[in-house]
Image (cartoon, rainbow, N blue to C red; front, side, top):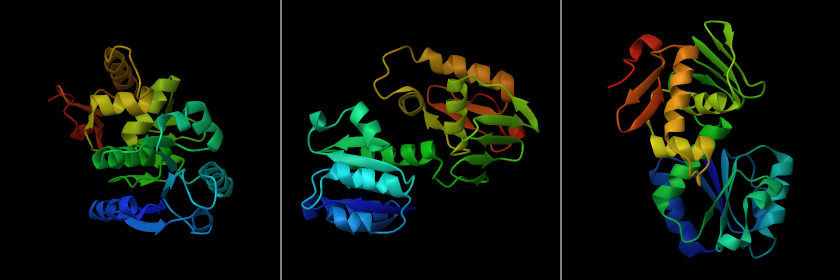
Length: 230
């Protein structure tokens, strides 16, 4: 995955890029908004709002006008941006400086999965569709078929299945699923996750979702490879 890091502070940019390279990403660093808008294709953009030449919000809008590349905005102050502004800019997520590197990597992974840009093991995937053979999911039409039979899902069931299907075989932590499928500030009971998992199992097959007790859930690449719960 190729990341574009837009950050003018070298004391932040250099260790950040080095860490992302160690994580296996291909990284391109630019220090200005003008460079960012002419940098070419990327799988995800990390965009600092405090750039020396152009307002970071304008850069975000320009990038979004050119493509659907996932954008994570980086800001020095949490009151500089809110969720409404985030949507208006066309960004997919944001982090506030100073941020933990592991948190940032987790957010990058979550955004890539959510937008369908991440690579999946054993799956044929595009930005809008995932095909596991037995299961096909289309984000554009929000249709799901199991063994060529269409399955009716609620909006949140679809979001949950799309999240799991974007990284087949991986066991996702309960908190990670709640944060990415519901909301990072979700204050409701986490039992809602168990209810949705149970409903999905009834609709797409009991052994299609693997449970690791006390840890989380994952989608099986092959239904007969899942043992349900362990």
